[in-house]
Length: 549
Picture: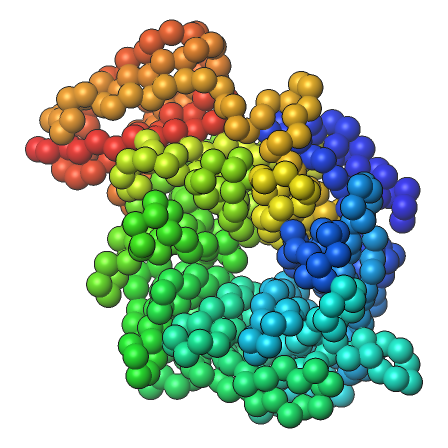
């Protein structure tokens, strides 16, 4: 297995750096890799919960092929001692040490929070159910609370076995053989009572929308706590959506994504109110929706990407609350040949990887390229209208080697952003939830502050300018200007407000440096807002124009 891992590193690192926009500064092997060979289920990183000055990664394994090792749920704390390069396992737990019958399914959830507000952080682990005769209603929520101080330990240590067991567990339902599979989890105080809730999107019909709370996480794991299901779609007289694959939370609303509807659940001050919105054109958002106050105006916006089960668009969408609906703006279409090329957007996290005060939104992919395994960075540039794509930038943060065929090259949805060193910039931490050739991919850490010779830094992309189309508004023709500081491969496309490609003006043409003007004739299009998107090598920018007929 170790030799196979080394082969991975050669394939991923040795030949893939030509497309690594941000250097890979650390490759973290999977602990107990002969057992955990079904992928990385989830991870959170950049913490120092025990306050010892050492950076921590928390990781759970995944089950992709139902192998005997991967069906056993395991959780690990990895820590890198200050000044050293390698991470070490300093704490771990096996769910079967507490419940021998439990086995897991695919894509568990994981978060760090203080659910009971006692000042001790907890690991909240959502083990995806696999109901059996011996385990017809398994525990689906597992909470391990930090022991306190500089201890590495979480949970309650069994005095007989010495194994670490959870402080609290919960089945979510009292019914046996219910298929409940949370895939996306957010921790937030949706009802404003001062205590965090667990908000889950579930991809199975047993329960799709879950908002829950707990009154206490007992230090000694004595089961004295009370779990409450605050809301689920089972309370509704009728449910008009499907299985949920993502959730994003604003101030007092949660949005649950599927290909049929975006389900909105709002706390109105006295009760939860349910409503339905149209889905994204490209189908589901796969655990990648991210909420933040992007421009500092006090309003929470959402960025989300499309995975599958709709049309062929693969947009990064800006979603803004407006009354009972969401205003949708397509920022970038990633379906084009040099990006996803028929692939899918999945997984996401946010932080500030360049310490410029603007949020960097990171998205993963599946079946992208070639090259495969693209990790995308999307950033608002800090000024101007956030609905104008020209005020945003998209770059490729990383990509794996072209020698991986799309069908066998990972599912890069396991992503976090956190500060993994002693500089002020955040780092990107990612892995794959599915294995390759019988082994899990390692955890990769990207550091924008660590420059490598021959690797172009994402923070200094190829210099080019995309100007405002003129005239604007126009009827029916306008000119799109752009300037290249040096020659590059150019694609110039036009999209409608739904994110659908309506024209490709330049398609992957090698274009010389200098000023360029491209005429666009919209004689066959209806009046409305359109977006033009310029891609030069691995960097993309966009602009907005209005057709008035």
